[in-house]
Each structure stands twice: as C-alpha cells, then as structure tokens.
Amino acid sequence: MSSGDTQIPDSSENDSNASGGILATVVPDFIRRNFALKFGIVLFVMALSVGLIGLAATEQVKDYTEQQVLSDYENAAAQEADILSQWVDRNRLSTQFVSSDDVWASSDTEDINIELNNRKAALSADAADIHLVERNAGQSQVVASTSNSQVLTNSALESTSRAWLTGANFETASDVAVSDVYQTNSGPVVGFASPVDASQNRYILIEYSLDEIANSLQGNNRAEGGFTQVVNGSAVVMIDEPRDGSRGLGENMLQSYSSNSPATEPIDAADDLRSSEQQSGVTADMPATDVLNERYTVGYAPIQGTDWVVLVHAPNSAVFGFVQNVQQYGLIGTALMVLLIAGVGAILGYNTATSIDRLTRKTDQMRQGNLDVEIATSRIDNIGRLYSGFADMRDALKQQINEAERAQKEAEVSRAEALEVNKYLQKKAEEFSDVMEETAAGNLTERMATDGENESMDRIASEFNGMVDELEKTIGQLNSFADEVAESGDVVLSSAESVRDASEQVAESTQKISDDAYDQKDRLATISEDLDTLVDTLEELEADNPDIDLGDSLERFRTVATTLQSAAETSDQMMAETQTVAGAAEEQAAELNEVSSRAEQLKRYAKPLGDILNRFETEAEHEFVFSGGPSQSLGEEEEE
Image 1 (cartoon, one colour):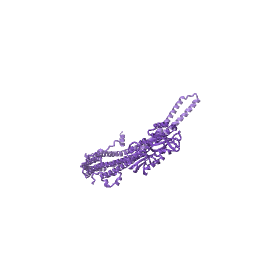
Image 2 (cartoon, rainbow, N blue to C red; image 1 turned 120 degrees about the vertical axis):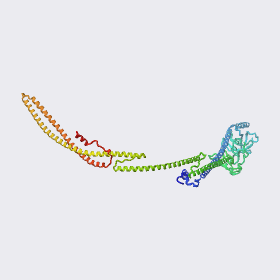
Image 3 (cartoon, rainbow, N blue to C red; image 1 turned 180 degrees about the vertical axis):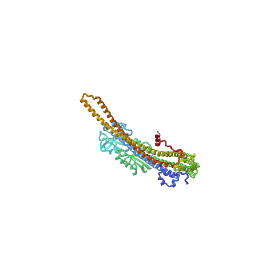
Image 4 (cartoon, rainbow, N blue to C red; image 1 turned 90 degrees about the vertical axis):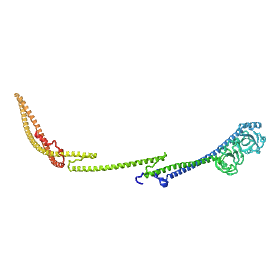
C-alpha cells in the first residue's frame, strides 16, 4: 500500500483493544479474521451455556420439586398418624369417662341396659356398641350390652372375637386397653376397655366402627392409584383405604400387609421413629411387590399409644409425574431456547456478516482509491451507523483530497510569489547593504530608496534614512560644539588668569586693611584707657574740691570715650569682614585654578573629538552653531 492510501483500522486491532489483548493471543488468526466464524463460535458458546444452564436449572427444579413431593408425603403420613392418634386418644378418654360411673356396679340389669343405651347415644357416631363385662373365676362374660345379639349376653368372651379382653392387664382404674381391629356383627371395630371404678371385676368395653376414620384418609385423593393403610406391629392391615376412591374400608382389612420383606421395611422404620424426635419418614423408591405392582413411594409414621403404623402409598408414576413433567418441560424449554438462540443468532449473524462483508468489499475499493463507491444500507442499527460512518469518512476523504489539491495549487502559486518576493528582498537587501556600508564608512549623505513595492522594506528604508538624518545632525552639532569648546577653553583660561591676578590683589589689599585696622584698634584702645583714667582723676578732683564744677567737662570726656569705644568695636567688625573677604578671595582663586584645569582638559579632548567628527561627510545645511558659551559671554562683558 502506498503512503497516500487511506488507512482503514484493522478489526483485529479493535478486537485486541476490546479484549485487553488476552483473546488476541489465544484465538487463532483465521478465526479472528472471519466475523461469521467468530459470531458462530460465540453463538455456539451462548447456546451451549444456555443449554447447560437450562439443564442445571431443570435438574435443580426437578430435585427441588421431588424433595417437595417427598416432603408432602412425609407430612401426609404425619398428619394422618396425628388424626388417628387423636381418634385413639378421644376414644380412650370417652371410655375412661364412661367407666367411672357407679351405675355399672349395680345388679339391676335393666337399669344398666338403659344407661348403656343412654351413654351410647351421648358418644360419637362411630361408637358401635357398649358392653359391661364381668370377670369371675378367670372367665369373662358380657353382663349387659347395647347390642341386639342374644348370643353375646351371658356368653364367655373367650369364644368370641373379644377374647383379647381376657388378656388385658389393668394396673389402675384409669387404664384403658386398646385392641387391634376385629370383626363383629356391626363390622370391623376397635375395642376400648377400662375398669369400672365402683367394681373390682367389671369393665366397660366400647367398640368403635372404622368407617368414619377410614373416610378421613386422603391417600387416594393425593395421587391417582394412591392409598393409605394402617398396619399393626405384626404387619396386619388394620385400616385399608379403598383404592378405587370409594368411601368406607378396603378389601385388604385384617390381611397381611405383604409377604415380601423389602415391603415391610417402612414398618420397621416407623417403629424406629417412636424413640426419635422425627415424627415421620418417606421412602422414595420402593420396588414393585404385592403391595403395588409398580414402583411406588411410601410415607410412614407411627401412631402414638399403639403399635400401629400409617403407610401412605402412591405409584412413582403418579408421585413424580409432575416432577417428570417439570423436567420434561424444562428440557423442552431449554431445547427451544437453544434453538431460538441458534435460529435468531444465525439470522442476525448471517445478516450482520453479509453487511460487514459488503462493507469490507466497499472499504477495499476505497483503499484502492475509488472514493465514488456507493456506501448505503437500510439498516438503522450499529451496522447501519457503521455504514453511515464509512460514508461520512468517504465524503470527508474526498473533501480532504480536494482541499489538499486546492491547497497544493495555492501552495504552488504562493511558492512562485514567494520566489518573486525573495528575489525582490534580496535585491533590496543588497541595495540597503551598500547604503549601510557607505554609512558605516562615514558617508552620511547616502540614503535608502523607497519604491512602494514592499511596505516593510519601505518602512525600514524610511526609518534608516531618518536615523541617518538624526545622526548627521548630531555629528554636525558635536563638531560645532567641539570647536566652541576649544575656543571657550582658551577664553576661560585667559579669564581665569585675569581673575586670579585680581583675586591676589584683593587679598593683598585686604591684608593691608586688616593690619591698619589692628593698629587703629590699638591706638583707639590706648586713647580710651587714657580718657578713662583722666575721667577718674577729674572725678576724684571734683570730689576732693567741691568748689570745682567739672560736670560738663566730664560729660564730654565720657562721650568721647564712648565714641572711641564704638570706633574700636567698629574696627573689630571691619577686621572680621576683611577676613571674610580675604577667605572668599582665596576660595575664588582655588576655584579658578579648578576651572583652569577643567578648561585645559576640555581643550585637550576637544581637538581629538573634532578630528574624529571631521571624518564624517555631512551636508552643509546640517552644521550646528553653538548658541552660547564662555567666549560669547566674555565678549559681551568686554563690550559692556
């Protein structure tokens, strides 16, 4: 690919950036290059994941449902065992309550029969008969009964189905003996016997029918083909629920539960629960036996106070039918979900792969330089936006290429103009260089020419010309100033000599005046002292000679003395001023010496400066005339 070709980002680079570079190092290149293959693999992984998740979820739901079903059967066994236990406890209490009446100790058989019927009417509907039994000499017989059978009255119990009572052992009057199920004229019953409190050898026997309690069993209602049985410790069926769903008792009453030992295992397991906190249990999968001709589930629970066990049966096909349906529906749903994902994914993948392949072909054409290729799609999803993005990129590339070509043409024109400008600038630079060389050599008459072609160059020329004009003026002024300085130095030196001579004369005159003032001061002081002495003498004379009047003379002498004193003081002031004038004259002489030294230096420097400035060639109109200075001032003074 040439450097001018448009670069299209490689999808593998985007994949590498998206996956953090990990998948790029693991996935083979032939997979990474093929979107359809990648999409198919992802789709397969998704379908496989959904399938595995569906299978796992279905299995979990199946297990959960199965556990719920087993728990339901375990609870059902416990509930029915609890119902039977309550039924036994109720009948125990009823029997104990009836046996506590003193009437049973009476010998009046008629009254006893009446009371027995009254008590039966007061009991629950399932109370079949009440018998008063008397035991004498190891033999038991019915004394009175609510039964209409004449054979029963005054006959020995040992010869009837009630013979179990002869073996009953009562330790206290409140004890109640419970029999297994036995047949009577009223049908299968369970006998409850309790000693009469007012008698030592009489017992109340109440027989309860099983029809009502059998109707409370719900094994058949829980599952099709299900049933509940109550079995005693000898594996004999005490209560059998009809398997056809009818009310009453089943046909297996008082028959052996099963002749197969595996079938009796739930009975043993229920007996083991009597000493455990657990109330019930369940066996999920029992083999087909004479109990059921197919595999079945059985829930079991002991009935407290008896050796009976409740067994709730149901075929596995009915128990786990719902579970199997759940599993089947779960598998079907999982399969449908996998097929749906595969189908939808295949459709989406095919459409997406087709669109991407079409876009890839168009981008290849763009890469080869064909920017007129049509990039359009009816899709409005990410692929559609990708098409729009490539179309925008194509248009942008075309615009950029057009702009680049236009910019190239403009650059060529600008390059030609720049060459012309460079030539012009080089020419002007050479001209300016020549002028600057002349100026540097001292010729200040040269100027840079302006032609109006380039504003910057004209501005440089104007500024340079202005600078040279100012420089020419400055040099002219400095030249004139140097001449004036040299001339003024001579004048200052001459004036300084004259002033120095005058200052020396002033100093000498001042000194002479000072000396004369000192002499005059001494003379005045002497005269003043003499006058003072004379005045003192005259005053003493006037004092010694009162006749002599010297007042006017003394006054005049005093006036003269005062005048002389004032003159002496004036002489002191004049001497001080004379000293001041002398000091000023000396200072002026010193300053004049400094001025003379400065003038000598200026005169020495002015000549070399003038020589240097004379090297510059300037126009005459730029010469500078010094407007003032020491020579002019001195001339004015001389004219005055």
